[in-house]
Image (cartoon, helix red, strand yellow):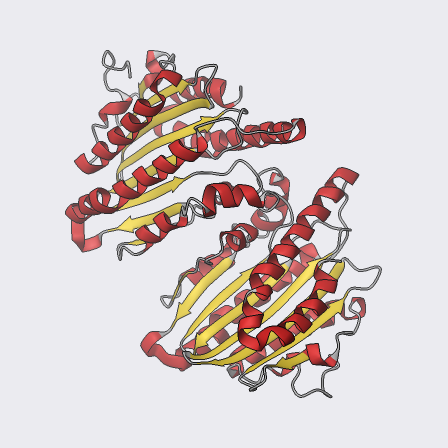
Length: 274
Length: 274
């Protein structure tokens, strides 16, 4: 990641706890080790790779790497956002992979949303790109045969976790039925217990989910007829548009002001609405 | 319901607690008051309206009423199953409404699964009949504008409830993102606390969900072009087939033996696979 010449880069994660930072770095490194030659360097302007609001109380980084012509990867997006809010510090770290239309295999999505050292929302999933009711073989291939739900169950057993329901029904619809969507609340266990959970539980689960994605989803093209390809294209583009709307268009202006937010959103749009 | 001449009828609920029984009867009565003239009498054979295994340790009832020609209702299905298992008594009560292809509006689904007097699984939903990612206006009309998620949130607040994840990823996929799917575990609060929750919390929520369905879903036809109609037909038939497979084909033979199970499944198939 060619980000050493800017103030802070995606891979720096200066505001994350050591276990969270290490986990993110490990996951990105794993992806690069497997897909490195298929990923082009980021071509984002420097003021989109790193951005902050006027007072410096909100900072963000963005890293987008497109896939090469012969890759199934459309693009990989990594980002972190840090904001000093009156209620405390907000940290959001995201790692997500979009595949192109040579395959209908699921995407990869990891998101940490943290607004206190002792509580954390984790969303980890292979979001489907087909209607799982119509395409039951797709459900079987990517979710049942891969035993993906075992990972969700593993985290469910930890007493400090409980299921998290996004306030957006759309986002809930976009996740797979095996999605990990949990609130980890360590309460009196404090940040030490959070570190323990990230290290001992979240890390292994995230790595295993990424392995499934690397082994079963990104690894090759999948046959589709023209109709399926068109439907996939329509579905992907609707998901991208809506994700942009929900995740960014509402949150970024609030944290960074309209000018910075617009600059970042415009840069992302090139990939999302291509 | 013309079931007084058989040993026990759907509306008797002899094994349910009084609040659960009253709730089921109230919901059915509400449907009949609103849709009565659109529902034909049950034409199921008597040995399918009521059935039991050889020893009498498992009993079940089934009530299916088709919609009239001018109704949006395909059929309403009510059933209860009671089984004395070595682990304790199992009681499953179901009330579900299927709409025909003059509308793509959601179905209605209520299921109580109880295998102890102090714990209960409740599934309550308007399962969608379209891919919510492709049809965002559908999500808005039936789930967001109706504030359906408020009902799920109401039950989530009760300390004795926690989200329930069906072991079937297919069933999870078939539910809406606003589905109530909870395990109510009263522990030391005992059956009295369960009665309290059914009466004070589950009842009002179930009635309100049914109101939304009666007011917004079953009330009229919806315009669809031929392609949409065909897709709806395909999707409905896949859901029905799979529901039959998961819900009945696996469970009934275990509880009632193959002969009784086959008789019941064959009777249901006429409606599900029509």
